[in-house]
Length: 147
Image 1 (spheres, rainbow, N blue to C red):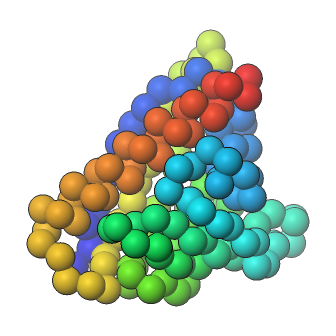
Image 2: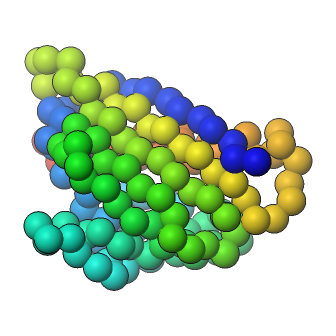
């Protein structure tokens, strides 16, 4: 069964700046501590990364997964779903960027994860909460430093 979580955070930047950082996958290893390697496998018709593979630290080991990205609501939302993974059997999510005016954006991170390995639910929920919190904190640091 998939575990669902979401979290919101205000970032001092416009939605376009937040979207630009999130959609620049090649730079993730520079600022996202759990991401060790990123490879863009396929671009969409507009030249944006459409199919992206990741190697990340997860559950005390290295995890590999490939995500397919949807830009249909860009630059106010970017979403993804897993094509393949070694630890996760389902990995879906999105970032939603809502302008609050005055160069502030409320960023909401939604994440649904289903593991392919058995773990107690409380361990999965704790790990997922940590992933979402860390991702938002690191995103905020990256975006605000870039501005």
